[in-house]
Image 1: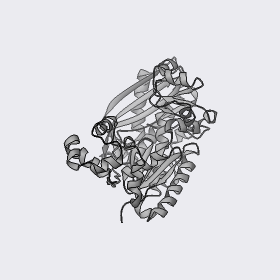
Image 2: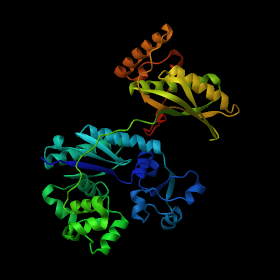
Image 3: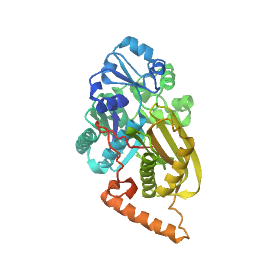
Image 4: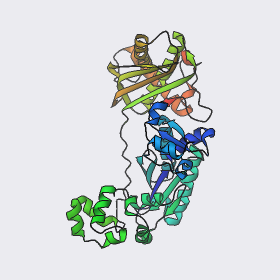
Length: 407
């Protein structure tokens, strides 16, 4: 049985996430730019435009000045990568529930092998609708996706791109050549502007003419690998392996924007300890020990400080993380300013448990942490905490977005 591959791609990803998070932005022309501050925005480019902005002619990567000329009512927003990362996680989770293997392709798109789940292309249509509904439920109805299904990754991706926004395109093996002949060459992932121009110079401007091209000509003009790929893709032949290789994280941390500014040492220390415990729990849960600790502090006037240190030993204990983090904050902190945000992060990660201590006191603490983790896994991380952090509360935004970010 040939593979059945699904590709899902968010429509106007950054913009639709912002519209989902903020009802005021829905139905309006908005553009996301990567630079903060209005002056910088004016000299930036459009990273993503909403569907409404695209209809008025705003495109990526159009300069902001041109976009504003075309669409004077355009609302500009700087990107929030933590928010987008959260939606990416939810997308991958929805795919993993309904497929055999999942491969993230970029921030807003992914492949899924649904061969066993779907069984056939009728089943693939049902699975695609289930996935669409799951994404709408977990990400919000304004975060729409286009889905393509085909016998390999290239066809599935081309299919998802063929109907936007909110499309669903199924391409069965017997229909691959007809589908390719209806699509522009430049729409295929792997055929960039330079390759497309090169093909045009050879008299090749469609999949039909590419299919008729001599293989040796393609090998001579584009070298072995690219030439072979062009010869195969003209016939709908491409990679159908969905790889689930996941790289280990470079860092594990938490940051939190507080509902009110912090002034007293006690408030800062209590919240810092709670954040440190959350970081430590994730380290232990994922089987990592950390060799570096860093902190980030943002004040009420939006100025900031940060610091980092290397630990003498690999750590997994929230109390140790806290003591080092507080020592850094106490050293660099501007005591004349209130604190709005604190971030604690660990890096230099090693896939290992913390080394067993020779001291009885440390052994007791390690047993306590194991008991803590068992309770947290079974009943949730909020079910157990230190007595000193019981009054700390990391709340969500009213729109559903977390103040409590993983970093």
